Length: 139
Image (cartoon, rainbow, N blue to C red; front, side, top):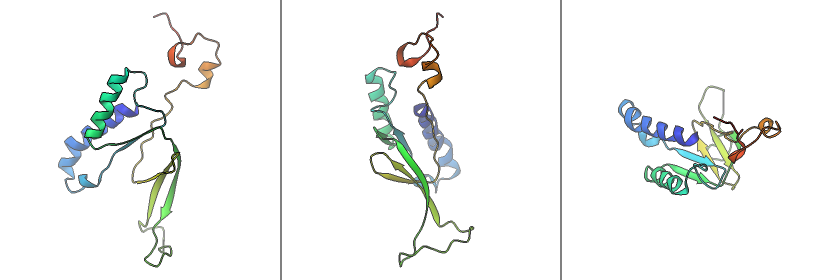
């Protein structure tokens, strides 16, 4: 899940990357975006709250109740407000994620972890479904 990945990525950055690139670690920020109202929805609320507080203590930006609605590349502007010349080789562009709440986040790398809900095929299969729309099994 995105929660597991976020924890592993944070540990990797704090344990390894900080040794290899100590000057760059200050420029790395982590943001976890969740469209639903909370994290770890299938777990007990006290555990989910504990995990959320743990992320916040680590200075991980957590955005709940909003979804990514778009990702676009943008170009930097010069001091006069005009577009900076771009010859396809310079690095005068950046990427921005737009969210359902109207906010935006510029980023360098995005890892997308989505689609944890059962696919519509399962819902329409006629099989017995349990909690969360998962297929019921006898073992």
